[in-house]
Length: 328
Image (cartoon, rainbow, N blue to C red; front, side, top):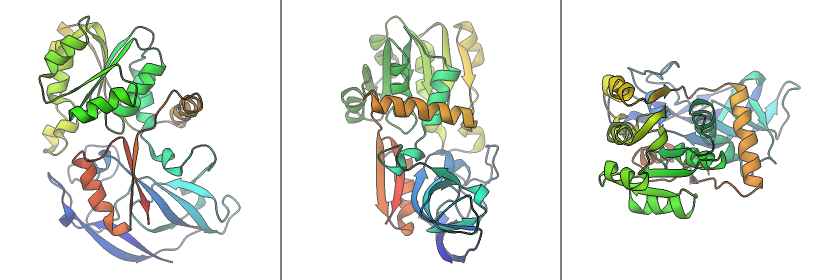
């Protein structure tokens, strides 16, 4: 079986561009052969393309296929675990087809969600951070930074479903802020370009009790300024610095300032256990069935050649919610 795949031409030092990717043809074989139908896109994957990758996963090297979560259909299987036509998930990456042992694929139920791309969402990260790390509950006043993105758009809704008194989001434009309130059920939202401290003081005069942070930088500082005593900060990511050098991409939070304000800093990993993933899918399915959840997503339809362009557009903030590619 011949596949077409996207490989790195060079590891990315700062801002990625089309020159970092190339299309290659490769012969593949294995116990199971799968046609790729959907590819997940997330900012986390950019870190895996860097020479100074700071994640506990091996970075991709020049000449290697870009590895991301993918969903596909089994074309052939030599063993009993999978059958032709099964829907499966794997980390096969940016390629039209993949092959490997049956153990490298997870069989999915095609009837659970309206569309297979729902499996590619960043819900486990959002759910773990809100429910397990920040332990959001009745009466909490929650602020979510990057709330129109793949993780933040889910985190705010999860917080609401767990009983938060008020959920506030920040986004990169007024249109996105309006979307958070009008479509996703946030209580309030604002464009972070316009004095986030003033916005938070107006929207949460009593102070925030939980901060779910995907952005860092000025929004972290703003949240600290308006935090109520004992507030919990679930630190998920730092989108504001993702294009910098390693030392800048992962800035150390001001722990002394947090301690002085009685704020608990709770950084957490985006790599999850099977139990955490199962907990998310239970919450997600139940909330969808009860019409208590809107799944914000963008599905880009393109051939494998267009995947790098979709990835770069996602990094520029051109899409809303969870982003995936449906290979045409």
